[in-house]
Length: 296
Image 1 (cartoon, rainbow, N blue to C red):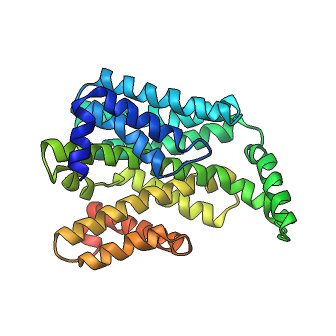
Image 2 (cartoon, rainbow, N blue to C red; image 1 turned 120 degrees about the vertical axis):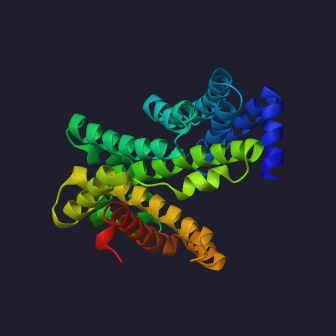
């Protein structure tokens, strides 16, 4: 089914333009699975057809999403952020993948880029958490009308939102890149994407850096490191998921357990625990890769 859909998209550019316009119009209020699908379409066109065509398709998505966001009276800054994160960043990663042929390089750059964005936010804004206070106060008023009081938790929530938003952005962008690359591999070399995904690693420096950030953020009260820790955990969790697929291919993990992992990732109550487990698995994989004599 996915191969037929990818073939249908790439046969006529207007089909990709229509598809991305429809996907782009379906999530004007927030990130959703449709945002991953929308971002994957220009990735596919860049990798399978032509970068110029991929850019044109991305701009179609930009126009559709910008129109819906404007109709919903979103601020220009929010509109610009959505358009950049959902279309332009996946498009840029697709260009890098086409140029260098390394999915792992794109993965590492996406993780590093998300962390750098958080660093810039915390250096530029005098009080980054204050950006979220109006939104949280509105949520608090809505919940208070339902008999739920979260006023005491507002400050803590405001501090975590930059990091959690960046982690969600990272998952969305990488989801678009991976889906578009998978679609392309179905058309040119089935199974190629799977081999690339199973080799995803943060590497020595990013892996050590991610681990240090998480550890320091756990013991010290540092808002910027707290935010970056969300991205670090997300990056390590992606590597842990790659390890799970690698173990499945090697016959060391039954397919049923892989299905359980994905189910638990989709269930809100268990998602946090599963992400934590996968992040630990990703950390251990980095250790095995660069210090093989230290791990049995």
